[in-house]
Image (cartoon, rainbow, N blue to C red):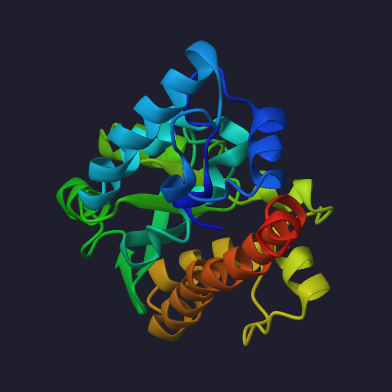
Length: 248
């Protein structure tokens, strides 16, 4: 589903009204004409579409993230896919005040970069990486990854952020990232888990370069598999939310 099929960004237009429009064959911004909605809501819908067109042409993800309800942020994904940063971090613990970030992997437009503590994991590198993205995608990143990065690297992460944990729940995919991957049959060529990732970092600090290689591989897979997970979840939500009207 694309943003051009979305009307709930207009003030006063909720999901019920949006579905009513879709049922009447108004499924794209191009279909919005005078009279599709009456009164103030019709004016606001037309104003939204008029403003949304140039905003989308300018790749202004912030505009749409601000206009759409939190539960509908997944609708940004298709339009901003090439400029989406799928990211994941590894740490030495669960509390940002007592643990440190060891690696950060960012996957964008088919390429993955991993930053390592003590080497190239710096505030400047992270700011540059995040600035290059129009949309961030994580799994539980709003509660975990972002607080760690903001605390340790003096960042203020304001890029629109789709945390896949919540869309997953909406389509009845529960548990952690690895459990959901198994449920969906997403391949993972690594036997490392979160606890082992901490041990690998300490082994690297003791001089074991091979341990770092395993840790980096694990972290990169976390970031890269988010792209596959988004495809699965996005397709399910498309079928659930929009496809019945688009195909009707």
